[in-house]
Length: 95
Image (cartoon, rainbow, N blue to C red; front, side):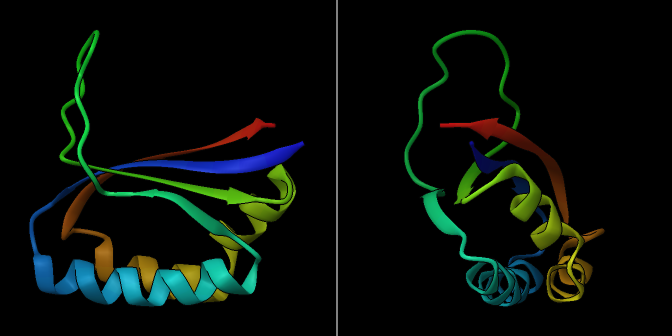
């Protein structure tokens, strides 16, 4: 079963977020991740969604998705985002 990052973001500091995104891309590539959604148009069809940006990344497994998040490379990228963007992220097992 594959693993997916499902991230929702509100950005307060565009410059820091761009630095985060550049660094995160390096970590994601290292772990074989593939962006399926990276921003883009969306429409709320039911319920609440209080975030302006959505990102979905596919990995070969749940375990690899978790290893990427926990990696030194991603945690370095994350340091550019913390305090500069509201972030809600989960890892999901799927097809």
